[in-house]
Image (cartoon, rainbow, N blue to C red; front, side, top):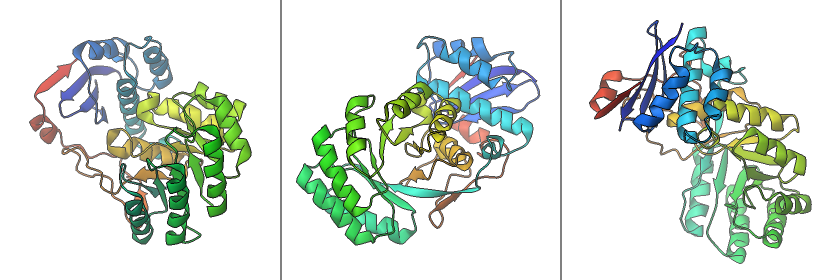
Length: 335
């Protein structure tokens, strides 16, 4: 089997890898120029779709000629195709850990502290398995909010504070000690990405685990080696592919650390969902509960009882309506 053609429907955002057997690999939410698609085509067309590692290296070594989001979309489509060839759902193709994933509700950005408290209560009542929030507030307001949210949801509901990489070191330590008292699950991104010195100071002074953003397996290894975070946070779209996240997650798993996935992510949430179904050290998938899927995807992800169930169809399990995709296509890029 060989990849025979690459097609991108714009502005629908559907990427298709076509093979000489008629089988296709898909990814949604993709945008690219004709020149970028030609570069992808030069690597993939006439290649074996099962040579994912070889294709990953070839695309990665194009020296920034491809944006990470496009490289990620191609990698997802390759994984979708290879799992379809194997006749297995992707999460089982990746190893298989669970067939349903707990959902952490991602708090709404830019809302007031009182709205955060109300949203946390609603998330708890709705059956979400955790709640993550951030707030653009001064330290005193934030400390009060941390305590108020815990008081409203009770002692057993996992809570995550997103520092958004904005806290100075001593402020992060003071806030972290309040998180210790309130028994938060972890302190997300108290310091900016790649601040190993500040991150290590914060992580060493508080009991609540901290996380830091990474965009590659190398960055994940640096965080673990420098002890600048207890967990990592990454995404398929930002890292550049499923393979990138898998490598980073396996790296930190060796240190007993979690790999948190940033939001529902690329491909209408299907990529992050399958990763979470395969990775033991990813505790949740993050969703708002209000996600909007591509109009041509017949089976969008649904939160039920605080979980999302993995599709059992081969590959990503996306039920794509190609006719509907064509109706939303004004520019068809073929390479």
